[in-house]
Image 1 (spheres, rainbow, N blue to C red):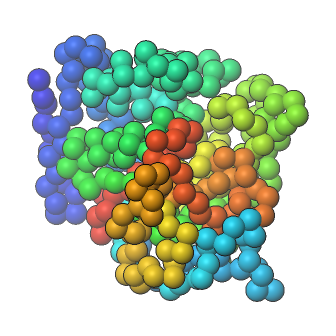
Image 2 (image 1 turned 90 degrees about the vertical axis):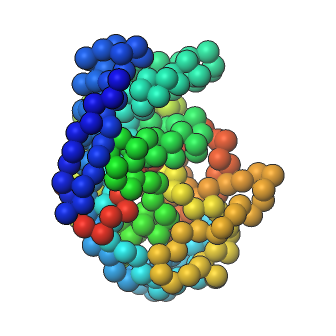
Length: 319
């Protein structure tokens, strides 16, 4: 059974189909969950006015590169991106749980190792890595893309994963020359989860302005625990690394188009396809500039452990 609601957004008529799952979501409560998640996804979009900026590692004041671990972030290229909106927060486990239930796919993971690590029912237990407001480190790239596609189907809006140009432009607050997507453009690390103790005590409030940890645990802080960047976007430095929609290619910047670059047309290695992942501080990497907004690297599409946020490719604000 479907219920259709009509929204007006900048003169555009949008026809979202909010699912009423008579079975999988448990009647009215399930309907409420889907409606709430979809509504919040629209509400939490932050409009980013397009413009031109230098994509890549613009370097320190002395000209030296921030990223020395690899050389994938240069040469710097001048690019233009159209206006769009991007989620204020990383997607959470609570949201993914509703998505899995709404699409009838929760059982796909309940019988796998992901049951305990990923999709066990979120609770309000702050000691639990499945806490509903913590960022989802999804089982693979397809789950991230699928969630954004689901939002597009539910709202009629062009939800998608960001391109890496969109991701960096937003992380740098419309292309400012900052190395970290924090309130100050610098980092003050929260010691939570830092080795060797990997101490997990959520009663200890967040400190500093980001979680760039060295722990292998799947525990994270709830999204929005640290101050946002100047656009009002949270956790674009630290907490979890994030998928983008671009196929990864080490030398892509040498041949990228200047208008709305969206990555190569196909993977560099079809036998091991990789997508571009940004915010490596979210994987705990900070040596050699890996924690900066410029760091880019490829991750196999089948790999788990990376988070994401969605964009809406519409040239006007949607909320």
